[in-house]
Image (cartoon, rainbow, N blue to C red; front, side, top):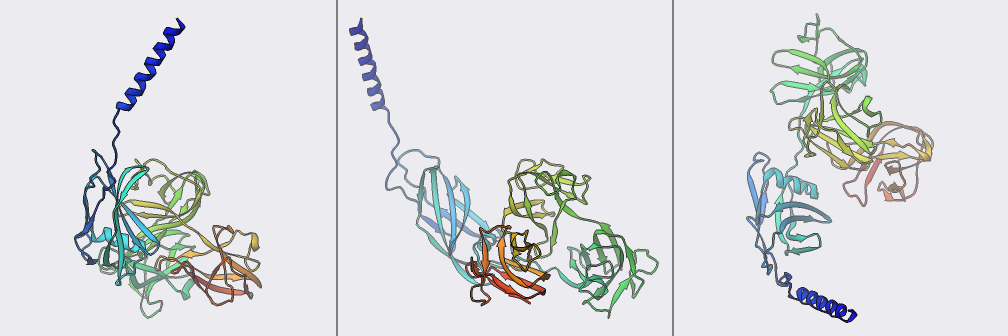
Length: 428
């Protein structure tokens, strides 16, 4: 019986080996390659033709040596930055003016200046096997996509942050000619509307009937955040409570609020907030109230009225919401601040936060900060992981550099990270 069992075991093992040897595995052709071509090697983007097709990237299908179902990925590289676009299973992708301009600006292209980006395509067979093409060069001229919604009009008064002397809270252009809008946070007091931060021409409202009167009476207001609409054609105005904010378990005040405020950015016509969030969920709502709120059904980056809560991980973020398209983004970012013996909370913080400029990329500022005699540095997210001093006091910040001595006073301070390796700072 033992002999029979051994014989059967031997026959089974032999059969298994033969079966394994007979199975065929696909073998990748070592010469497989994909070749990229461009519909144009030099493009100048026109902001007046945002939807126009301006560039088609095409590539050949590699001779894999077996039937494959790859996906393709296009990479644009400039300096040390790379933007990646997924192209699915097609063998070409066409970019519109707006799509290509966004890619170029993300790479650091300066508007109106021709620069070159290297483009390559990866054929992705699996998480561990890709076939990369050689790169081709595209010369492209992008355009700045910042809007100019500025006007000569502003809100002035005892209810505004700068009082009757100004500078005034600005009005911005809207899609309607001669209809302007401002988003001030006011205290209880009075306001008027004037041009060029001067009293040469101003409107009030004698009789408080919603009609503008040249040189008219002051307009009383209660404390709050408002949307003020000024119609210079009909000479009428409206003042309505208006604020957008973030609410949720990931925010400082939880689901009850008050909400983390979003700030209007007139250079992109969007609303933004620099925030530190905990792990949890958020929604966007209006006027600290659940009457108007937005979530995201499907996590597709588009807000839905009354939609699902949006999950987030702990971190510091720039949140951007476009209420024209209801698209939104939550991007990790540093929040820079001032720390040191000259700062109100000393070397332990929390730091005095700087403001992110909406007008100029990678530019941070604070106006009217009060410092004591002592020293300071700049650091990100109240942590020493990323900090800058100024070794040599030459106006160029150094990573981990020397403390910066300051005398007691009130200052305007800026940092320009246009060159992240040598940011420039000012103090006045």
